[in-house]
Every structure is written in structure tokens, then in C-alpha cells.
Image 1: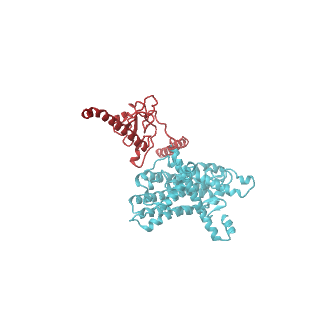
Image 2 (image 1 turned 60 degrees about the vertical axis):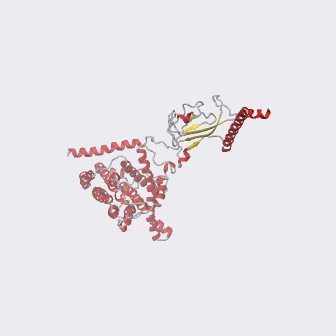
Image 3 (image 1 turned 120 degrees about the horizontal axis):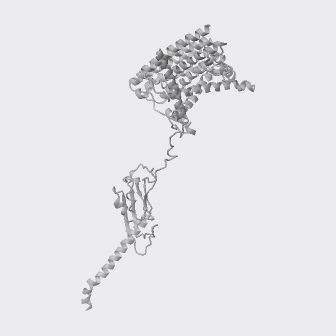
Length: 187
Length: 356
């Protein structure tokens, strides 16, 4: 009998204790973060999407070579004399036209190894992490600032220079070869 | 009262009756939208979450958005289900809850049907729900649905007994089954509410208070159990029975169960309020009396009734998000070993007190 009443008392009091706890929690500020509106601050050294500042890039290819997953593709064209490519922010003179600088973020493993060798610190990790795409091709980011026509022109310029050089070489070499031929005609 | 008002206004008793019958439906729909939103917010904040926040201010339009969504859903009937019973069951369940609204006195001016046997009528009519749930479980041809339905029937029938005992206590004290009369007897201040002994004279009033309080607790527990809510939600225990008797339902038919559940929550709360907490009476006087505007009083009464009802609906939600579900044997033990003896002894003591 005693146990019967103790059961009743225990049942009621524990229910009330529980209700007190839940009622307190009704006024506890929610821990929810309204994600797209409010974002959790990222840690300082967080590694996310890569970005390349093409104004500073000298096309040295070091990042592409260090990349363990080969996600960076760089193609450069030498500049012709007389062309001014400007200087990087830390005073290095640019000598190469970067005609292709693609990073396939889908392959990227976010190791940050490409960031360290860069002599001009133009490739770095940003805090952008929301860049999901429906097509995998869209994750292939192209950082080249030159237009297609410009790239073609640069290539042409360099080809011309090469051709000229070759022609000069040929011209320089010709006399050596041609002279003996000429000599008889001259003689 | 309101019947005569509409009959005079429209000149037709049939139209007036239809309007009176439709008014609780409007109330149910508005209330379900509110209660659905409240349930989500209460549950969320009790768990330190935010709940719906996107649709409207703090997500208050979320239930409306959900209703629009559920209206567009395909109405699936399982291949081996008994089609007729399957379609009739949700209607029956909802009708059971809706019919109970007829006798609920929202205010002195608005009672759907001012029945002399109002309390008995509500008890009788809400038993239709059991039939509807059993029909749903049987017609679904699904083991989970059937187990849920049988559990529900067992539960509702068992918990009807303490409810009736406590209603008997109230009948003994008040001498009436009419809910409007019951509310009128508790007029004045909250001191006249039956939970505080009602309008009984002298020392009996004070002697009644503890037993009325016990009666109130027993009544509330058993009414929560009757509306199949956690901690008594064994019929639809999602962790063991998928969704219980409405496992196979989808679309509007599922929505009808939802409506019925919330409507039932209000019916049981309204019953508790009408029996113990003064019905539609204000706990202190009326503003209408104070500034001498008689037509304001019924509106105030409606306000008080809704507030009290919604408070007990809130307590049900509060309990739901506090307590874990009972085991089947615990559920039956609570009813047969605790509530029924307590209610019976309570009835004996109250009748003894009233004879003195």
C-alpha cells in the first residue's frame, strides 16, 4: 500500500520535474544557426577554393608541378622584345604570357601545397566554400585574363619572332654555307 | 441564441442551422493551423531549436503551405486494402471529433446544440473515433495499422472509465449534464470554478477542493490518453509501428487524421475546461459589465474559453515533448491500477460529502 502511494507520488513528481526542465528550455536561446543568412565564422587558416591573382602571376609553373593531383594546367607563351608585361606587386618582372591557367577544383585536394612555392604569392586559398555545380565541367576554373584573340595574337607574335629568329639564323648560317658557293661565282 | 440571430437575419431556419454547423468547422480549421504551428514551435524551442522560420514571420504560414502541399498529393489506396472502409475511416474519425464540437459551449451566445445531456453526448460521440480507427487499421490490410488500431481501441475504451467516473463526480456536485448550465453555475470569479469546489455552500466547498483537484488531474491524464497523444501515443508509435493506424494513408485522408487529432485535443481540453475551470466564464468580471456594453460579454466569453482551451492544448504539447512513450503494460497499469481506483474512491468521497 505504501509502495502504491509512493509510486503515485513518484510518477507525478517526476513528470513535474521533467515539465519544469522542458519549460526552462522553452526560453533558452536556440542553438540553431540560420545557415544561408548567418554563417559560422571560419577558422583563420581554413583551406577552401583556390584563387589566382593573374596580375601577379609570372607563369613559373611551380604550382602546377607541385600539385599532387595535377589539377593545375598552365600554358605560357614567351613575350616578344618590346612588349611590356608590367611588374608583379613584389617587383618581379613578368616575361611570359599566361595563355592557359586552369584549376580543376573537382580534382583539388585542398592540400595548399601550391600556395607555398609561388614566388609572387598570387595563388592562395579563399574562404569560399559554396561553389557546388550541377556539371562537373563547371568546376574547371579558368583564370586567364587574356581574351581568345589576344592569346592567338601572342602565339602568332611569338611564332613570328621564332620564324624571324630562324630566318636570321638561316641568314647568318647561309653566308657560311653560301660563301663557298658564291666564291666560285665571285671568283 | 446565435441560432435565433441567424434565423432572424436570413429568414430561414435551415440556412441558419447550416451556418451554425459550419462555424465550428471554421474554428477547427483556424485552430488546427494555429495548433500545428504552435506544436512545431513549442517542440523546437523545448529542444533549443528554432522550428519553421522561413515561411512568414517565424514560419507562421508553414501550416498553410503544408496544407497546400498535402492537397496536391496523390491519393494512394493500397492494392489489398478494403477500399470502402479505407475511404470511410478518416471521415468517421473526423466526424467523431467534429460532432463533439456541437455541444461545446464556446460562449453563452454560441452553443451549437444546447443539449441537456451534453456531457454524455460528447462521450458517446467521441467513441465513434474508436470505430473509425479500428476501421482504418482493418481496412489497411497492414500489420502495423492493425496493431495500432487494436492498441488504440484498447486504450480509448480503458481510459473512458476514469473519465466517466470523474464526470460522475461533477454530475453529483453540479446536478446537471448540460454544459451550458455547468458553465453558468461557475459564473462570477474563479472561486466558483469546480476545481475550487464550485458554488457549493459552507465547509463542503473547502472539503471538496482536494478531491476536485484529484479529479481534475485524473480527468486530464485520461483525456490526453484518449486523444492518443504522447506519452500515450502507442497507437501511432512511430518507432515501432511506422505510423500506427494511418500508416497506409496519404494526401487528404492523412490530413483528416491530423485534423481529427488536433480537433480531439481541443475537445478534451474544452471538456476539462467546461467541467473544472469555469467553461467560458471569465476568471474575474467582464469588461462588458464594467462599461455597460452587454453585447461584448459573449465575445469576451469566447475569448476566455479559447484561451483556456488553448492553454490545455499547450499543456498537452508540453507533456508530449517532455515524456517518453509508455509501454503497453505500463499504459494498462496506469489506467486499471491507478486511475480507475483513484477515480472510484474520489467518486465515493465526493458523493459522501454531497450527501452530508
